[in-house]
Length: 181
Image (cartoon, rainbow, N blue to C red; front, side, top):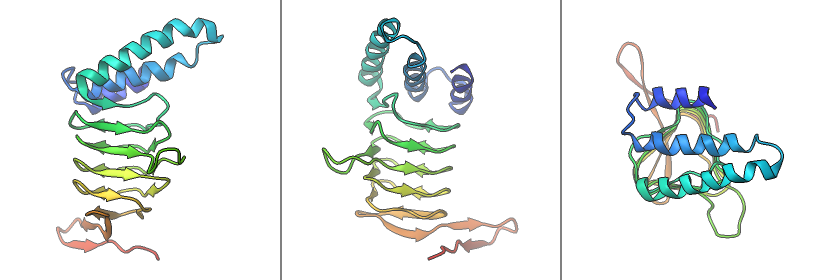
């Protein structure tokens, strides 16, 4: 738990005023409490977690259940209006911004997104359903992503259209990534 907290501290620029950091501290505490056995010993820790989670939701507007799986370098860039489903999986170095919803497409239908490494999710974006987002993907602001997004792509629009991502080469020239179809 403390190694993960150290990672979040560094990712959020060692700034205790960052609300994303607060939410991740509560998230890590919630994950840690599941290690306490037997269950009756865990109950007071679970009560504390639920109080902390509710307080962090009220203060930050971010709902990050401890059942979500997140990788290293997870960053909540801006706080407020962020809803994440408990079944979601995030890779390493993912950045999300305000107004983002990641979760189920319909009530009662299982399946939340699996998001790859180095994914940047713009403000107001919605990523919904049992879909996969590849590595090195940028999801534009206010995009509604309902289908899989291959690696090295950009998803923009409502519903999102998938485009190849431009890569800046070392000599400064731009090249479009090629998707394997």
